[in-house]
Length: 108
Image (cartoon, rainbow, N blue to C red; front, side):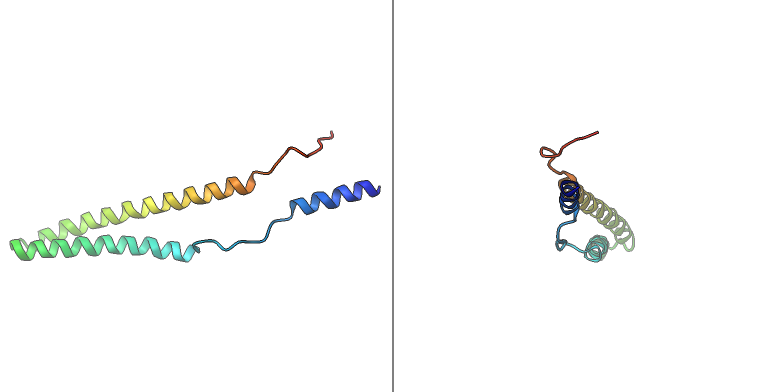
């Protein structure tokens, strides 16, 4: 009985979660990063379009076109960032879930 209790205690101890480490990015930081990327794309596109309209005298067509292009660029950048973050989280999940199986006794 004592051996069984020792084995149970050892198994419980091995299954306890480790200390929680600080994530490099909180979810709020990630959300602000994505919003900033979208707004930056829109802003840069609008400024380029306005500048071309001012120089060429084609108002408002350049601004409309380049604002839309900036929006597309911002969305693409957001999606790329989201995929990068997803890959990082997937790698962390798989390394955390992987556990050594060499010393386990399998009894049926």
